[in-house]
Image: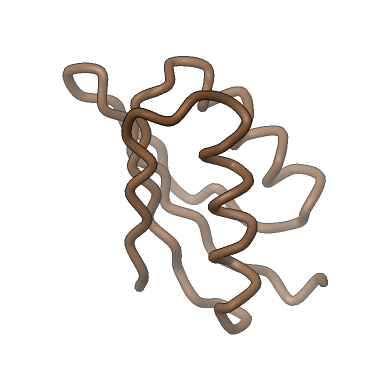
Length: 75
């Protein structure tokens, strides 16, 4: 599992940084992303849908959003 903290970054930077981090991971590996942008849920949901990666879990606590993304086999 890899952790990526994108706190303080606004759309689209959290997703772009996650996309770059996922490229370095192998199939089935997990990336945990921390974000503070309230619009990040829409961005991550859309990105995972079009990329084929799985948004396995999403949570929010006190304005901090956590995303658990599993890399798919799809390029």
